[in-house]
Length: 240
Image 1 (spheres, rainbow, N blue to C red):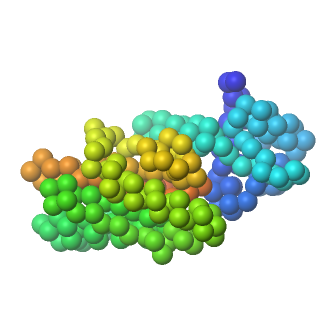
Image 2: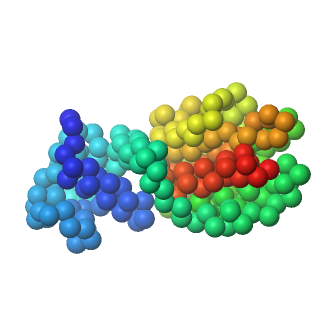
């Protein structure tokens, strides 16, 4: 199914609303907050079509709808395409640009940046310096505030995923300088269908490579988080 411009707009706004609230989104809410040029009944029909096409799901009868992995992937691909065309939304990166870490001390700088990113993204952030074989992990206190992790089983699954990335995945990954976004089942670790990861390489002195990743629920702010990790990569590449 090829989406119409109206369907794309409805899907994008629904995802943005769900990211903010973590609650299923109804056609009434969308009609109240956004002008799609049609009546609420037509928005509901469009949402039904999006559900049949696999972009939305309805967790409960008579409830609103939530985005699926397919919807998030569509959203992220469009986001990355817009950024390639030069449309950037630099939100919450002033603190990064003002970074004053001891840049001649790689571990200290990496640890400080990891902490800064976890605060800006409200996510768990993992950075890796291969030459020193050092990992820096920040953000547990941030991530547990997300409503998804009120379920202890979800939190345990998330912790196992982080452990898998640290022990098995990050040391072996080569991103060739590109940012990678793994959504749900796309994650290389097992039992990660509820989470997303944004990861990228860091260019370090002496042609070294480091790596940094942002982890959170699929309901993460992809736009902001991609901008933030891009800013970090630029700091390491140009200012270190």
